[in-house]
Amino acid sequence: MSLKDKYAIVGVGYTPQGKVPDRTSLSFHLEATANAIKDAGLKKEDIDGLIAYRHFPPCPGEPDVTPQHIAQHLGIEPSYLSQDAN
Image (cartoon, rainbow, N blue to C red):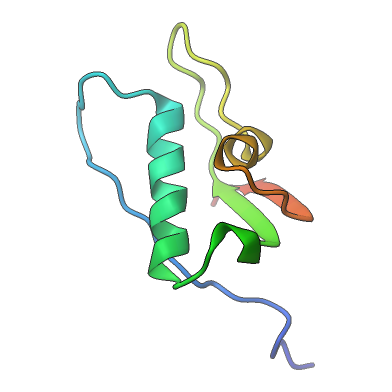
C-alpha cells in the first residue's frame, strides 16, 4: 500500500521558548501555525487539514486552545482537524 499523494508533513513552525511576557497560549499556537504554513511555501487557502500537537491545560484566564480555535483565528476552514500526542 502506497501513501504517495495521501499524506504530507509540509512545514514546521517555531516560537520563542521560556517565559515570554505579554504572550498568550493562543498567540504561540497561531505564530507556530503561521510559521509552518510559511515554511511549507503555502498560503492559508491551501490548508485542508490541521493537526495540533498535544493539549495543554489553559493558563488561568485564557480560553482552551483547540484545533478549531486555531483554525478560526487563522481564518482557515480545513476539512480535517485533530489533536495528537505521543
